[in-house]
Length: 501
Image 1 (tube, rainbow, N blue to C red):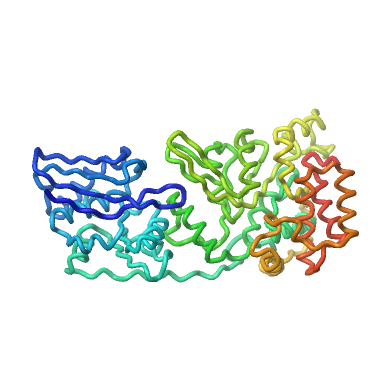
Image 2: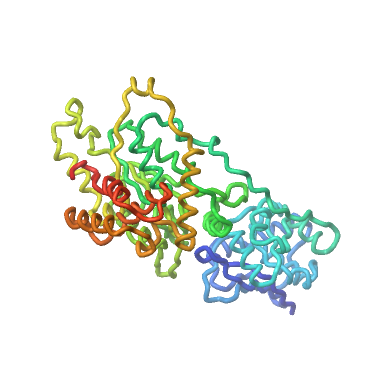
């Protein structure tokens, strides 16, 4: 009887849990069994492994083969167990030396011809391998992704099982995996704010929102430029830190959405359609995968046509907006994903879109606007730091107005404001920090309190008012929040979707 063991990984949230893949070759009727709480995709690995070995010219031994995935109390899902099962089996067959296979963890899916295919979760697996003081074996296409776990990590990135065996037996040397170069961000490569003509109030609101990572609701008639403004917000945001790059890339790796295996270097921008389900938005499903709120972590979640989203989907956003995390609980377990996103939403003032325009509004005005806005709950609206009405620009104005400031120019001011916040609040943006950390003069505080009492702002609304005012002061490079900063913040707080005070 022969027993071998190779390290594999089970994915849970954005983490990879070490799994010991054990293979036993024993006398008895020829069979191939996989035990250890494996799902259907893992159970089907026996056919892929059998075919991959046959492509190498090897046949399974005529013995009783038992594959155990330990610990057995953790559900094993996905095809990424193919490679560790094949490697443990080859070790038990004395094809691969056990001292070589024991140095690595493995993750990858096998084709019938022996090729190693990409799978989700390579970056978390690489980080787990570092914790276990092991190297990592993966597909050639994902070697660069694994390299971001550390420059000292021993990575074997093979395009097929035969090349991997030759490398481990010393008959072939696979090329080392280098850290891919980080491409510099070019604001001119995407939508530029210079394309926006006029709309000074909306442009200013967008800059303030970018500087403090504040949530923003834009209202206006169809074609006013709400979506155009939102698409240019990512060009105003500063680069991610190394820790943020790793955190965001782990989420996208779990979802299988890392482009060409490269990490996410810039704040992500997610804009799901309004038909998106609650599960797709916040995460879940049978395998509890991250939703759009987690894929937008440290970036922007743009919800166009906000009232058209289902009520349960919108209400599910309330908790992650406050906490920056989302916990998905199912009968099979519960998983917590990061969800610190900047919410930007756009909507028409009513269903017809022309409320307030006597020439175009429908006969149901103003009731149609009230009914349309009522689709969004009060607690959800209270969580919007800023609200701005986007006035349409006439064709004559478009033809005559000069281009505005470019994204690069505005991004410099945003980066300077973010640097001030980071130094004052230990890396937190104004949208995350407590107002107790904000220096504010007595007159401005009294003015804010009187305004909040008169407008009947909630405690949450008052806190968000102070946060926006602090961002405006940071953009002006002022040490203390003054009354004009609070007044401007109030102007964004006063604007409601139906434009009534």
